Image (cartoon, rainbow, N blue to C red; front, side):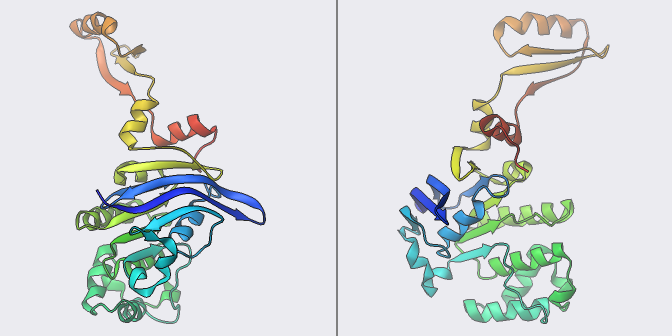
Length: 282
């Protein structure tokens, strides 16, 4: 499968302090890849490097199988969509007027505005001025702008950080649909549920280094303690290892109708991150 992003031994420093250290990973075409880490871990720096907004000291970085410096060219920038902390919107204009400017920039028809605003649930609000929008609405407008031209590669930096659960679920549904249509998605987040719900693979970033990488399922299996919790009808709780020699014990409990609930103990991504780094994702 084609590599859309290929990063090898990337290093980046600010004021002689390394903020990215020996970063290596690749992202395949049509993959949803999540970069998980707390604020200050270097997630935004990686996005700005991959979109040719920042230079780097060492390493080899390719996007669309070309050196990342080529992404400064207009023909290549049109292949990407970017949502970062910089909105790039004109606050005195309406939502619709802002997106019209980007239609001209991306050379796409005006009809793209309706589709993009329906995607984020803001079509009925298209006449509102950006200056009057809530933080959550502003985030959705920026997302609409980033997908206006149906990019082949979409960068999302904390895409749902300001959204309520209903809006978040709406956006997640739309991103899956966009991905099914062929868009590769690279997102950063410290929301473990968002990563589990959306991502084919995730990488844990801590203090500028990637500590682990894999699918959520693979990481959960790797760091699982392989135990089962049994809640009994009398309120007692048993935690046992999931192994053949415990089969008779479970059978006896079932045969005497003592089991109320039984489930495997699988760590979530936040717990795995804590195990690896000693700190949480917030």
